[in-house]
Image (tube, rainbow, N blue to C red; front, side):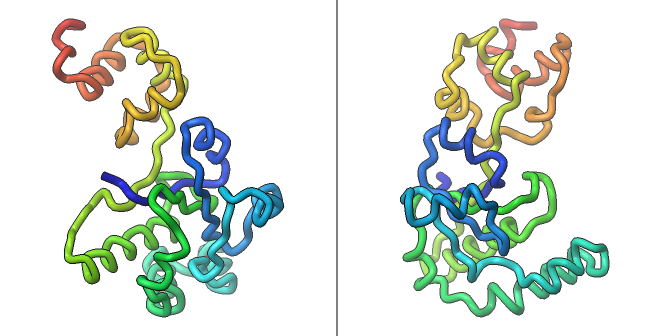
Length: 196
């Protein structure tokens, strides 16, 4: 079961509709609309200590550093300086850590998520791969299939049904029979045979 989540700022509106309520910016430069809510709306927070350092982040963005260089610098200058037990008091079960990159792009939030899992294992002794995960938002095609075959149109129930959806199904763009069958085989293998 996931305890913490990761996502991007552009998905916050959808995430609110899905029922998520604790958003934490871990970006160096938080969008103005998000910053304006900090201190006024308890759902919005910022943890600057987790953000990458601007100088080498910019070098990476400009292509002067590889992903491996970035990861090394992030570990040495940010993660190695964090105290997991102390930091853990800054977030709660269900917190969503946010920055800018898309789900499938290299990003420090994925490195931070990996670090949380490693630190949790050190201090708690449990190895839970799902302790932190990226939130996948079903696209309109996925909603259409679920609505067509299952009658679920409510965003929250669809998302709960889709929890852990694989990227390949998030990117389906057509309504071809083969795509629908492929999706249904993954989505509901027990009843898939009724659609063959």
